[in-house]
View (cartoon, rainbow, N blue to C red):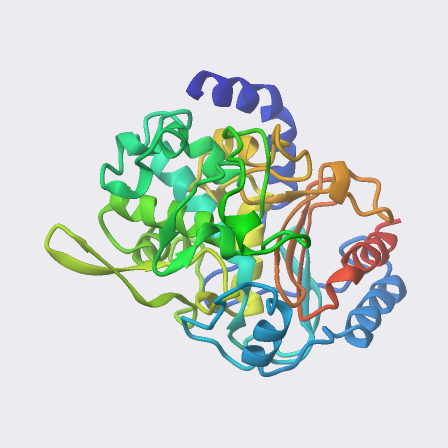
Length: 384
């Protein structure tokens, strides 16, 4: 796997170098520079049209996210809120061009839930563990690292880091009181159909499932031997100058004993509560790090090789990499032709869109999710 990652990195190094060279500006902590769209080579009228579109197409769910969550996932048997939630704000967003703020709307300092955008943060911590040799190979069986009963059984013992990261593990079991089959069950059938299903070999079928994502978070907690929010803070958020306002929560009873200390295992999403709570501004910093392929100023924080692998289409779903969505395959936005775009996506219309072709980062909060392709297309009209 390391040889594969190195090969990918070398093949794309020239393109990556040009991207970083274009994006010379990295904001200091608490400081952002804004330039006019015209000075950044963007059409101001087209950009304003895109912003108006985002403001006019606010997420239709309740602002009390407890109500929105329970309504959206009412088909799940036994579903309940197990972690913190927060009433949401209104539409907000940022558009960065070459690292500079080209446009903004709404309250960009407000801390809000970000739901499955959290998965892209989790993927980053897996990448850091790989970069530092804490995970020797992404093809390694996770049971080699987590030797409790989480990965017992003929099927679960076959699961490797690669399949956990691209959500094709089909891990079977229960974690923190939630059964894997009860999370986002199929539209057809009932409990017996879901409980006694046929298990798919890892890396063959992708299924979006927060329990299995939480298994990844739990496994990384065992690898890092310290809480993941602290790992994220020290190794990612502090170096990129994020504020001190973001938080990462787990479920109320998700406590694990590591080295004699109680540690909270965090969630990779928020549809039962928890996940990353963060401002639009801090989301933009994380997106800018991804745009520059893991580099911030002169520091390579996350290896380019891992991030390149993270945005490769998976065997199980060509629209999905390592917890980043790709603008290709069955989930491709019909309004946007660029297949190099990748993005983090969360419930309620939370998105971090990375466009390396135009050196853009687009962060939008509480946009009606079905409108994201049309919105990005309108932003891209400003580059023409």
